Length: 290
Image (cartoon, rainbow, N blue to C red; front, side):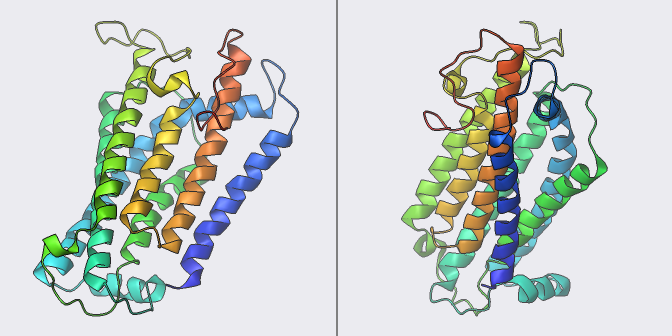
């Protein structure tokens, strides 16, 4: 596969790693102020804009999924403009197991689309958002990200002709392991998002507050932002489903790691700054580690 696509994701990952290093090296913010405090409040409040991002992701990756499904099972060629994008950014090397790799990409694209559908549903019917605003650059970057992820997956499809093996022959052990890990992480992420939403609701489900509270239960007992940790596990499960060896997708995983770590640290500092009794044993992002 061309190095340019992997390098682009690696560059994005490095940028968020640099931001994380700078944040960790900066002096601890004073209560009630500071750049870090403002950024943490931003991350707490702007999740509502993810609704727009997931709408784009569901539509775009849904289209890609339909086209790839037709290419895989109905032998219908991809649209010409997708073929041009694939040849420009896709894999230039021949692969010995083209059927298996083609199926792996299709399966991961299904997982990505289902993830987007679930997150969109949670944004619409589960989460309770504050009235934050977002910079136009951040907004455009978020929209572009979800288009880029699906496009990156499509470009991992082998370019050489497939031999048409039966579906049962194409399933490998890492497909099963990856799918099980995906389901496990997705369930925990949903539970954590429900816990966050319930902090602002009454027992009857009516929204009674938009203020922040200390979440408890599930993975919140170990980390401040388990929903971010689950997001990392979901992308890691996709790397496993692809068979471990896809360098480009591992660069995507590294981007998600540093992106979510930065957001988790900011939220962790927000909790520590605003709640004097916040549990000291909780890590920010990864249980027992970070």
